[in-house]
Length: 251
Image (cartoon, rainbow, N blue to C red; front, side):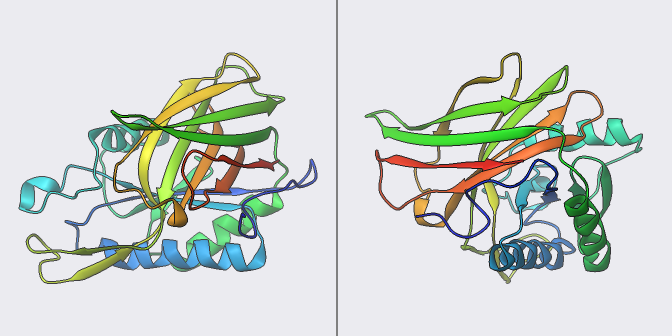
């Protein structure tokens, strides 16, 4: 059974907000931004608002003595692609990006509220529907996501992420040494693909320690090049494995 704000459908003119946070367990400025991301997600769930939060852990802090277990070089590369699109000279954490169009320091709650509010007030250009089915094999746990897109832009990209809430880490070294960090909506699996057709399927390999009771699948369509997000949807996962999972549509 899905939670509020994660399934169903909205009118064609409804807005949405995809909130991407680039962060690291090795950065002592990041915990306040991660707390803000948690509050953004929890508030949206309570209100039933189409706000989709994703925490991308970058790997360029790992050399300071604490390798972030959730970091991935591809997430750093994703942030680099945003930097090129924005004309930025370098990377920093924590960085928050809303709908691929605006960026700011991730701990700036007032700016986040303003940008999310503006995104929710804007009309969506594309409708995205998701349905999810997972299956376990002897070698790996894979998940299949089926998508349906209406009115996709030319040269569009579909991103599909699995995010997990309620993760707690004891940090032994680095700038956050001695701290216990709780992190929500951490990206545990991610893929991007060119959107050549309006419907299809995507396979994702799940981490073996993923707790589906605290996980969601988030899909969002971006314009290739500018990075602007034009449609998004999300669905929570049930506790069971190998079952037919719920579907979600968000315009």
